[in-house]
Length: 338
Ligand code: NAD
Image (cartoon, rainbow, N blue to C red; front, side):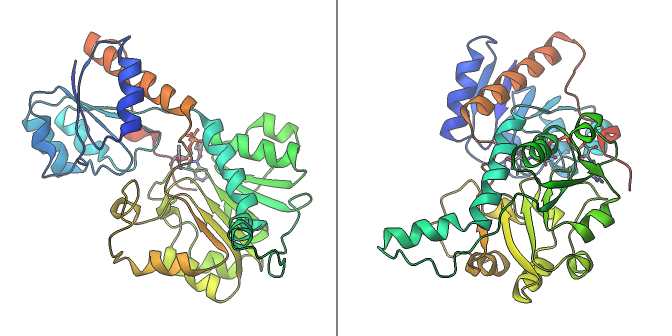
C-alpha cells in the first residue's frame, strides 16, 4: 500500500524501513508534520502514518479525504490528536499502536522520578564543574512513601508494580477498572480525588480525554499534600501548567518530572537550540531547580521503535487486505467520566 509517512526522523526511517522488508509497502518519508498545509502531500497515497504531535483535526481529515486517503495509521498509543468523529464521518479508518513497549515508558518514568527526587542531573552538573559539595541535594527515600498511580493500564500497571514490589512504596491507584493482579500485591484502588489528596508522589498514566484534561489543576494542588512530587509521562494537557508553576513558586510542589508538556507540539522533537523560545510558561518551568523536563522520549528504545514499526505496517497490511483491524481506534475507546 502507498503510505505517506509524515513527521519522520532518521530513527523512524530506519526502523520502518527495516520492518517494511517483511511487508513491502510503498513508503514515502516526509519531514513535515501533518497539518492543513502539508495534507496535500498525501496525494497519491491511500494511507498516512503520523505521530503524536501531528494535528489530525477535522479540516486536515477533510483535506486527506479529498486526496484519497482512507487510513490514518498512528505510530503511537495516544490518539487525542485525531478527531475521531470527523474520521468516521469521512470514512477514514484510524489505527494506532496500543502497546509497543510499555516497559520503555514505565522504566523511563521510574528513572525520571529517581532523577528529579534525588537530584541526579543537578549532581552531575556540579561534579562536571568539580563542585563536590552536597548542600541542596538532599533527597527522600522512595521506600515507604505513598505513590498515586492514575491509570493502571499497560504502563501504569508496570510502574505500580515496580514501585510496590521493587521499592516498597505504598501504592494507591485510580482507574475505571481495578487490576486484581495489582490488588494482589497490595496496590489499593481509591477514587481519584482521594488519591490526589493523599499521595506524596503522583504519576500520570491515563489517556488524555475531555474528562482527564488538566486533571491536575490549582484546586488539586491546593488540596494535595505539602511537598507533592508529580511525574507525567502520559500527555501534557493532563496538567494545568500555570497552576503547576504557581504550586512550585508556593513550594507546595516539591519536584516535577515531565516527559510531556501541554504546548509541546510547538517545541518537541526539533532542534531549537538556535531559536528564541517564545513560550514563557515553558521557559519558566525550566528555571526551577526542582523541575526536570525531557522531550517526549519515554518511548524511545530500540525494542519500542521496532515494535511500533512492526505493528503499524501490519495494521496497514490488514487494512489493505480487508482484514479486521485489531488496533482500530474509535470513539468508544474514550473513557466515560469518573
Ligand atoms: P492503556 O490504555 O493501557 O492504559 C490507560 C489506562 O487509563 C486504562 O487502564 C484506562 O482504563 C485508564 N483510564 C482511562 N480514563 C481514566 C480516568 N479518567 N482516570 C483514571 N484512569 C483512566 O494505555 P498505556 O499504554 O498504559 O498508556 C498510557 C498513556 O501513556 C497513553 O494514553 C499515552 O498518552 C501515554 N504514552 C506516553 C508515551 C511517551 O513516550 N511519553 C509513550 C506511550 C504512551
